Length: 554
Image (tube, rainbow, N blue to C red; front, side):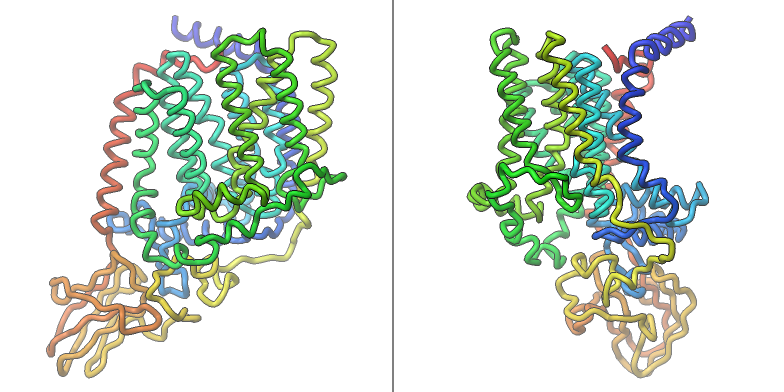
C-alpha cells in the first residue's frame, strides 16, 4: 500500500514538475558547462586544491580523538602547523577529501567537482524554495535567474570563492524550510536547521550574513513562533563544533588585526557613478551589474500596479523582500558608507562590502518570481518573461574562466613564505617571523641528546638524556592545544621566547620519555558536545516517523 502511494506521488511529481525542471536544467548547463572542459583554470583565491589535499592528510592521519573534527593541519607551514580548519569553514574541504579518499579522484578532479556542486544543485534548491510561495512558471524563471546570477559565476570562475558558492547554494533551502514551517509542515524544521548548519560550515562569513538575514526575518514575522526559533538554534547547535571555537580563538590570530578586518571594508565601496550605469556587454571581471537597480524599479512598479489585489500577508512579505533587497544593493556604494561606519565593530568582519551579493543572490531572483506571480494576464506575462530570459543570458560571459591551464600543479609553498595556504592570517599573534622552510630538527635540547621514537607532526615521542637542567624546544607554531609531557606528567610551556612562536619546556637532568601532542582544548570539547547533543535532538525530533510524512511540493 505504501509502495503504491510512493509510486503515485513520484508519477505526479514527474507530471507536474518535470517540464519546468527541464527548462531549469538548461540554464544549469549554461552556468556549469565550463567546469567540465578539459583542463582546469586558475583563480584569484587559488587555494582550494591545497586545502583539500591537506584535509586528506589529516583524515588519513587517524588522530581522531585529538583532531576530529579537523582543526589543525600539522603539515602546513612547512611542518610547523597551522589552524586552518579551525577558522576557515571546512565543509567544502571535507567533501573534496572524501572524493579523493573514497572516490579515488585526483586532487584536480575532486576540486572541479567541488566547484561544480553549487552550480548544479543551487538552482534546484532555489526552485524547491520558490515553489512554496509561487506557481511553476514564476518559480522556474526565478530559479533560472538565480542560476545565472552574476556573482555566482564570478565567485566560481574568477575569484575561486568555492566556500561562498556552497553557502549561496544552501541559502534557498534554508528558506524552503522556513516557508514549509509557515504552512505548519514540521518537515520544514529539518531543512531549516540542516541547511543553516551547512551554510555556516561552508563559509563562516557567508554564514554570518545569512544568519543576520534570518534573525531579521524572524523578528519581523515569527517573534512568537517556537518552531522557527527551535529550528534556528538547532542549526547553530549542529554547526557549533566549528563556529564556537573559531569565535573563541579569533582574538589571538592575526586576521583579527589585519587592515582587511579593521575598516578596510570602506575602501571597497563602489563609486556612485556606477549606481545607474549599465556596462554593455557585461564585464566578466565585474561582481554585479547595475541592471539590479532597474530590476528593482520594475518590481516596485508592478507591485504598486497590483497592490489592491494582493492580500495583506503577501503585501507585508513582499515589502520586506523589496526593502531589504534595495537597502542591501544601496550599501554597496560610497554614499552609504555611513551605514558601514555605524556598524563597523560587527560588519568589519565581512571584509568586503560586495559579500552582500551573497544574500542578494537569493533575494533578487525570489522577488522576480514573486513579481511574476502577481501578473495574471498573458499579454503582460509573455513580454516580461522574454525580457527576463534576455537579462539572464546577458550574464553568460562571467560563467567561464579567463583561460584553461593544461600544465599546472598546486602546492602549499606556492602561497608564500609562510606556506599556510594563504598568507599568515590564522597564525597566532605571537608568531612575529615565519619559518620559511622546514625545521632541521623537530625537537632540540641543549646539554643532552634526543632520539625520536615517533614523529608524525601531531604526536612526537622521544627519548631524552639531559646532563643538567635545560630547555627542550619544539619547532612548532604554538597554539592552544599543544601539550608537553615528561615521563607522563604535563609540563608548563613558554612560547614568548621565540619570534617564530615556537614553544619550550624545562627538563631536569636524567633520562626521560617526552611526548609532544596536539589535543582538543576545553572549548573544543564543549563545542563538540553541543554539536553531538544537537545532533541527537535533531534525529529524535525528526526521525524516523516523520519521513513518511514528507511533503515538499504543494
